[in-house]
Length: 210
Picture: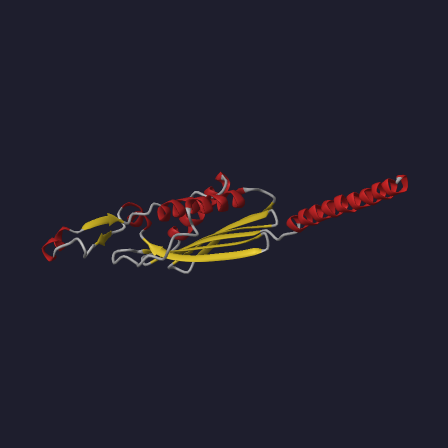
């Protein structure tokens, strides 16, 4: 009887040791897997204008494995182009900005048809590679202030309740969506003071060149 208890105790101890060790090794492997997961964030806004002096502006940001870079480029109808680039650095500007875009809903907005009187055309591009998953999105629109404040109307018709004579009294819902303007303003305000000051000088340089 004593030998049986001894053998059972040893067996249980061995099983417990290997069970605990296996669990710990699995947890360590899971942590290592997450730690080694690639992390890449990209955000870009391209604005093209129908009228001089500026033909195109581009705001481009990326964060790859914790190293951020961001660039602004402006090109005029006169052919002059100026680029402002922040050197790579282990800062959080891009990751915080990308997180803010995600909170605003950059993954949910959709393309909007250009308005007849629009003279600026926006293209928003975002891409994320994290936790071994990848996603990207491109959205085009004009007149972000219009979509943010007006956006047209959507009419609802319930034929089971409406008489033909009541169709002129249809209820409508405003389709205003502030996310378009908020996202554009976020790109325009991005970066430290020195970066934005250099952007202002670059724009003035292109606008003033003949």
